[in-house]
Image (cartoon, rainbow, N blue to C red; front, side, top):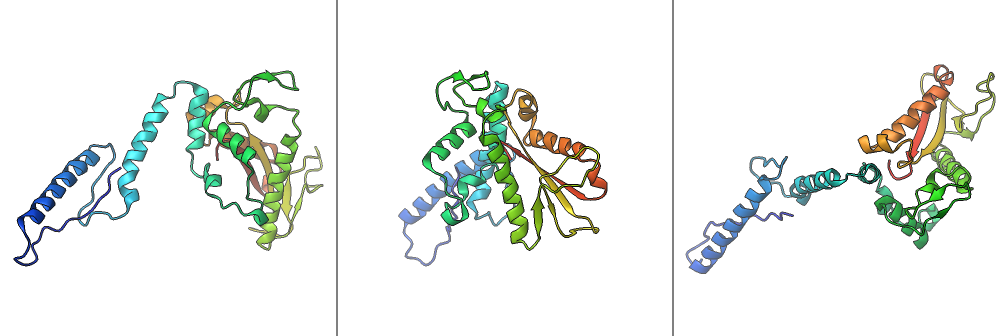
Length: 259
């Protein structure tokens, strides 16, 4: 980390002694050494004077270089997928959220422990046999793809509730799981607004949660950030293609360890 300070060597009167000048010269030499080291970082471009005063400007090239080095060191496809998901924009926003109980933003210690372990790829417990018959490893990834846990339905309903409450709080009335939109196969999206939002069309949304490290997704997740969510959103658009002509279709795809 390079901390930038500007030093003024202009003498201000005849009472400036030689010790002060020597100290300033030493400071300038140290600054020049660190500045040269900073400029050697790939992508570090120094603008013309005056030098930037924000510390984030000087930190950014080093952080980017360190991130690239860590990413290149990941040889295992699962580890690379986890790293890309954890470093994706907004995937760590929950770490900065104020724990306000009235807004349901406070997490208990066990929730934080499990979430942090899943995010960093740490062991959660001992390997065991899941209720679905599959072998669950110590990383706990099986719980995110198991077809039988009750939390799967609760998680989906909670996300749908968040969408509905957000629209209602913005003054847009909405209803969950509307019926009669598609008469041929009976498919029902997760929600729909009750007033048109654009081009006299109602907004229809459908929520889906996909596991970043699932066997069917991990290769795509290791290829780029948000790839799995994009795949899931595309499938939702194909599923409700009939609705997209008459309504505004919004697929809401969320990755378990990513954006």
